[in-house]
Length: 123
Ligand code: HEC
Image: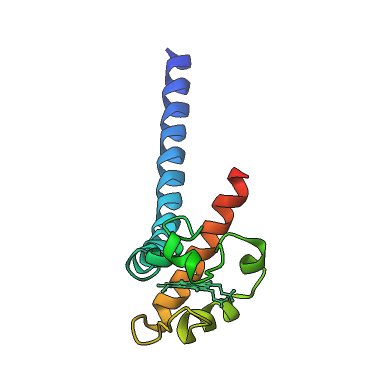
């Protein structure tokens, strides 16, 4: 009977720890998740026509000489440079400072980083 008591206690401790870890984890995920969702939403709305959902570039984007957003050339630029390009435009890319607020631009820069990471992991 004592062993069963110990096992029950241990099981309860494990369950509590698992629940605690899971909730701590999902709390931090949802903060990150929100920002990357905002970035993804803005990207889908404003960028996919030229850059495509994965950042590689659509035929239209390529005809305008849009860079592959996952490429090292783009990924090596600083967040500030990317945010500047998105806000002010560059070459054939139109400016987005009228369409996206600074928070959305930051979120979209993060999303461009995610596209770069996904590409890196699948290379
Ligand atoms: C009308 C087509 C078009 C749309 C829409 C568009 N882009 Fe671009 N983008 C381009 C072109 C063309 C370039 C290449 C500009 C150059 O280097 O001359 C480019 C370049 C870029 C670069 C690389 C910048 C650099 O410094 O090399 C980033 C990052 C980028 N776009 C992000 C975005 C994001 C984020 C959005 C949506 C908010 C977006 N673009 C919407 C056409 C577009």
